Image 1 (cartoon, rainbow, N blue to C red):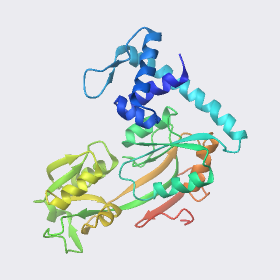
Image 2: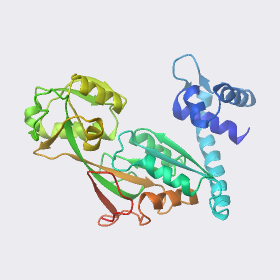
Image 3: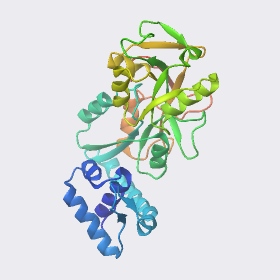
Image 4: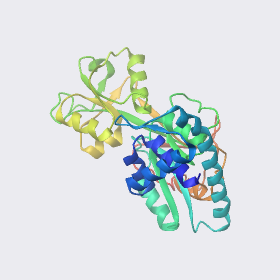
Length: 315
């Protein structure tokens, strides 16, 4: 049994299909499929049920999952130890993010990081906050941008910096509220809504806001991609509540919501007060302007996000 085979096995578990897993591992699908088949042959059991559109774990696959995670975490720790003495000439950093991240220009930050350390491979995963938390806990992710449901982070998760994002109502250009500077929650009672998928930090924030204000939303469509949500709003199928940056980047009317003024918190998190992986520690320094510290009740980096994050800006 090879570490490469276990990594391919975990890639299929994480991404749900062999096609997506191969894309994430930067190999052709046939090679990844052969690798997993060889692992199954070695173990004498099928690890995936391949009959549906998305492959699912068999009982044997579920039994292998904890050991595979443990072995890969150990392998990553070994690579980290070597990278620590090789000056980041090589290595790998794994970062996760919510789909609706707007407070940090992650593409620009990763590009800057790559220019400094071109030998470090960057692995980026986009998922919901619960999935990202599980990935950080399991050692599959070094860092992750989360939109937590509660004020306290889950056990085993350490926060390094927070951003506070304003949420606004976006509408189609010809909508009755398109030229309004602001609106009240109660004035949205008759509006059809386009909703982001359940379980995401954005969906939770909007659902709690509506419940707090007694607003019973009429949801005409729910989606799994933020770009599709924007396109549907633009087409006039409904309105949506999103971070302001999403609306402005899309060129859609952004209407400020009053009483209350909604917002959400995004946290950059990891497993330990300082990442043991030197490549991750270097990336953390870039994302926080070199001033990362563990968040406490009254300390830590905190940014108000209404525009692009400047890593040199201090709170």
